[in-house]
Length: 315
Ligand SMILES: NCc1[nH]cc(CCC(=O)O)c1CC(=O)O
Figure (cartoon, rainbow, N blue to C red):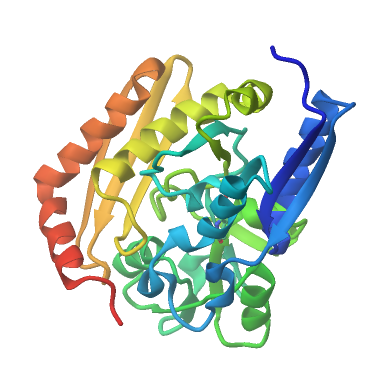
């Protein structure tokens, strides 16, 4: 490996979750390179500022990434830490997804003050989520429940639950665990109840692709199992033209030398969910993902996607 860096700057969003994630990477780098001075550059992104409209309507996940990329281009930062779930699947030159770190719990969590699980919610209960993926899956399986939008950072969302705006809310387990709020999780949604988003629970580090020095320094942080799962999941999203305007999910699990990959595309109202799954060698992760996406497209996803994309982001 090349000589250790003297100084590294990590660009991060300012939310508590983003800061936890950046501090986690900082600590790991500091352990690897004790002589190096690792610091954080904290930024507020457009996605953090727009809190009154659903994300799918204001242009999606790229909103959270753009300001951090500007800091990489300017040389103000060397790396940016993201929730992998928020990293666009079609990352373009001059940027590169350098390494993917070990995944935390990838499942969705059921959070409620009164109820233990989705199955126990009385008919008519209001469930908060602003993810089309979660919404469609809940609507199909629990048509007696009402799903309503819920935005803001984790603390804001929990505050709205506690105020009584919702009977329950659905959040990523990993985010709650990272912030020490796992006690708020009443139960987990199984992958059958809510198939997770591509990359959920994992962290990704973005750099400028020209920075081969950075790539070498970061390489020891990569987790091979998570990387294989993420390759498969992100391939599903990429082939399907992944964006958060479309309810889609992709989830891979390793079992020995085998990777089991599941994907789905849904009508936003949950009236139809198209599912596919495949198993194969862990070395074929990307091909498995592509294969599942093509199967979904043939089985009706093409029709759903064409219609959603034609109608464009709602105003
Ligand atoms: N959508 C925003 C987002 N991006 C990453 C996480 C949590 C951590 C993760 O999934 O890795 C969350 C919150 C959530 O979905 O509840």
